Length: 317
Image (cartoon, rainbow, N blue to C red; front, side):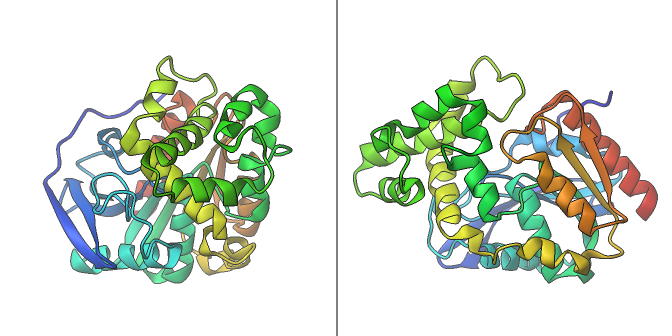
């Protein structure tokens, strides 16, 4: 089984102005002459981290990682101003053009897979290949799965769902609208309590077996505020996509080598997302990982992603 490569430090780091008052944190690791790849993190709002660099062979790949609007080290933190899918797609193109890259491999997981599909369907000529993990199609049913009392996640984690409802007085009606009101409130304490509850709900179901420090990790104030505010912001606005848009436009990806890696027991993004997408992409590789949930750090998912990058390298070299 493949495991993460050794730690690596960036060749350079910068902040790139993209409009609406946003500056994106961007870094490069690996071989500056290598096959270009852009990494799209999840959330929205989660940001990149050092571990995400370690999926890539630094001799082969020129890896561009960046924190999306309001996430991670990008500025201003947790800002919702001009924060929508279309602007994120435009940001990716701005980064590509700014770096003088003609086309690149797009690597994304969870929300990063959504953004990767939206980008690739908008700019297919700029995409050499796709490696996607934990597919999220941003349909009403996918948001329902994660947030509704009769959704799949709540049915598997009813105890954690009760905690998720605490900021709403234990009531699930109008959940997204009421959470959004809390997460955009002028009351700092109210806003942070809601953010921690939102992010902890997701964090507790990311792994098949949650890590020992899961509550501590997902209630970190900076992470919680960015993820809680932005995920709810995007969900309230149906991810700024038309219903079924990503599936209806999947034909635009014809000819692009694609690997989909999805855990069989993913409780954040149900497996049907990946099978439905694969049905629209008959040439895509769908790799279902038997004993894994959602996280890229699940051993089987890590193994699958690194093997997917090997498969793509052989296709493109």
